[in-house]
Length: 154
Image 1 (cartoon, rainbow, N blue to C red):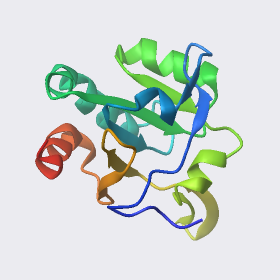
Image 2 (cartoon, one colour):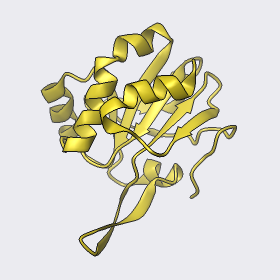
Image 3 (cartoon, helix red, strand yellow):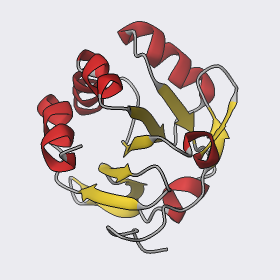
């Protein structure tokens, strides 16, 4: 499936967070949502990105923004990652790649000449009505929170 663009409805998602609780797009109706996709828990770039969002979480909350991360890691992996870095937001496990496929972020990658499928690091800013307002495709992992706030202008 192709990646949703600004002005399009955000595809529905539903999955389990680090506590094993079901979370869906419907849970954020009436709220602005920073929905970020990342490749793998507890890796350098993904940790920098998550910690940038964590360190600015109060700013997001003051602007009415909720934050949710999605990767294809397991609930157990997410739980360890959240606890290790004290992340104050949900991470959704998408082990069957349903959500990453629906958002068009499950792509072919290449490392050292080896091709494989993986999650593209992309962030979607979704408004209160569930419409994509902005898509950040070139994520600055170390300053992602500032990047989100600048792009969003919310």
